[in-house]
Image (cartoon, rainbow, N blue to C red; front, side):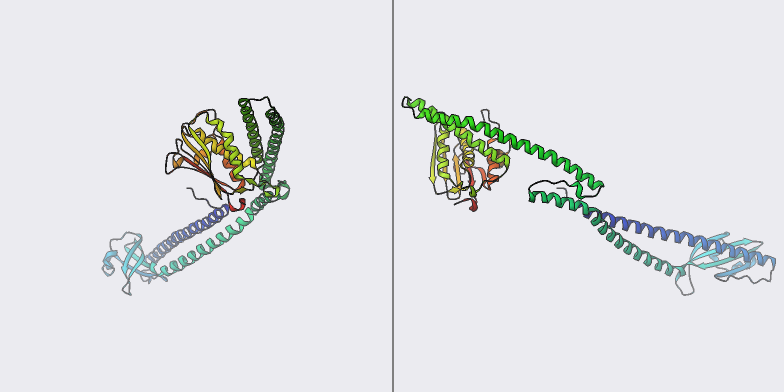
Length: 432
């Protein structure tokens, strides 16, 4: 999983790394330039000094050659044996040598040699005396690196706050929209810069989204209104026909099926309308539903779907359970769960149990795998071996309704026999 870091943290880290890198690069450049310049100056001074003394000694044999800053020896070739043996074969120029100094420690020297006019001159400069200066420079550069790094970190913190403040304010206004329940223009509250362009784009997107939601809401309301009217006509007509004394039992049963189907369609329309509005109608509307009564109606409405299969559909256990939700919502949930149980059960039983805090539907159908249970609630997913013209939307609607009302729905395989157990658990706040 890719780690995520806040933009502010990335800005601060970037500034700090930039400051450290730049200061380290500056320190390395300072050390390099100092070493090169110092070496060039020493070499030039030694060459000039030894050349000057040789010329003077050649012009005046009695001239006492000397060097004010360094050790020097100026002799004729005939007295070379008085010089260190290691120097005798050195050509004219400046050489780097390491020798034991007067203090008995090893020293690094620059040795200038000049052979001219039968004379030879040596000037030796102790480079080791500059090591202390180098150490002091190193300490100063390290301190500069630390200070500049801290400065870069502080600058990064300050700039991150200043740069991201408009973004933070914009996000806060967006969060306020959820609290006040409507979207307001963002662009007038931000500066006319890149953040302003973002706010303007968000305003345009919000307008399109609001228009789309309004059209969807109006469509759902219109469809709900237009469908309820013919369904009400069908329901009232079937009631009138059932009261006729001329009906035989077969025709009366068919009319009951039509009445149940129209009632189910009405309940489905109401439930889908609640989903589209994404609003919960609670006990303030007085809609306390007896779960047992809804379960009995659902079972009776689902019996015709068994189509002669050897399946025993029954309400096994009933305990007092009241749910503060419309009966239509609970009916849609149970209809889909019981309908699925009947669809996938070819023989055996489908039992509905009303417990004090849940409704349980058990069947002896083909069963499911435990790892595939949760996937059945996704849109367009159908169980293995499913037949018919279903689109795999029933369980997805069930989950959405349960989430809307704070219920918990789950499906798992049975442990005793092959089959499925579907459970709808109601939180305490939704029980009476």
